[in-house]
Image (cartoon, rainbow, N blue to C red):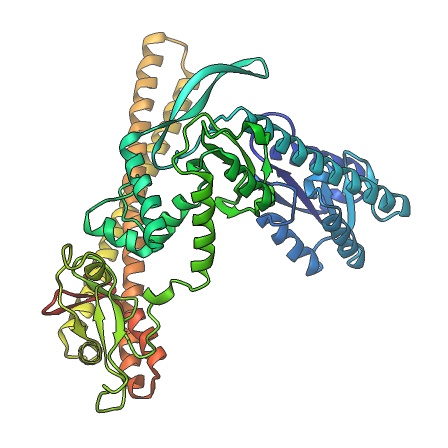
Length: 546
């Protein structure tokens, strides 16, 4: 008999129904209430930090896979809502368990689905669980609305142009905490004003990116600006003034606007909550109907009329797409691995359709987009004829496949040195293990002597001192042994990488003439780490050889 125990908690709090407590109570229940449990195999599945709103939980999914394979007789959990709060999910679960003759037991609600009354109770409890979930979601939203009406900044990375500023303390559950509001950082705000002004004037995200690149203007975190970063700024309501036009725009968008129209007097900016929903470590954009928009305590920098105009322009321009800068060339072999010496990926660009190679391929060149965006001020590396560079790189890789090539000999020599090093390292680890065991045995002997001693204090102190010394030596030796073991693992991993590389080189040579362009590209990406073009020469970097 196999019994599965499932436990879940949305977040760790250190008290209450912890995953460990749930498992312990389930084990106790199984021992005293399920016949033959003493001989049963008990398997536990734990999801710590996952909500019960759906079944997208790793251990739950793993458990269900095992159940569907017929490897379970009982499924036990502490409480029904540990499995989930969605009635549809629970109904599907019960149906699956019934089809597979798996009995489900919830020790808190005390029912068993193998009986009709237990099945009915399960559905009823599921309805209550879903009601509780919906009530929790409603309370959270009500709290957010309350906070929104106060215009507070709830934390996190502040938008460009703002800093978080503490104001009066607020009482939360009897505890005194600081509240924060957004304060303008005038130096950063100049960049924001430029972005809004330029987009209204030229309607080009890429134009702003090019200007920033050519003038060395970077993001708040010191990165280069992208069109996505510019768009995020242009669509953030925090920069919009809370005026009548803004009120109308967000109201018509379907947002929950937490202010009366009369309050939209243009004195402050807006603040928006729930624009994204937090999934597992990622943010997913919510629909406007879920946004909570309110008047903040900071000034807006763009009128509601201009803000809404920009949103319409962005929506209109996005339909055209901005995929021109993505490599669409079906001929280029080095797309994705060819870098300019300035550090940016180079992209292929076709010549006119009339220009073709002797084999009939359309001619193209590789160019650095950073050079184009900065008008040659930040990068002046010359373009390179793509068909020629692809052919030269392939020819060089084919030369590497020959057994008398420098790279082939080098890989063989490195593998031999790895074998020698591995043997020496393992021997050293074995010697250290012997020394560790020797000291541990001495410690045990000393403990025996200590137990038999007559209680003379000076003697006991001397023995304890010797034991501490031996334990310290053991700890040091164990660290060294671990280090040697890791070096051995790394060496083994590197050696396997070398072996794979030699196999890839060999197969590339034998198959090269029969491969299609996409297949050649994939082979090159397996063999080459990258290729760097400096304007005169191409530098080839092979995996594991540099």
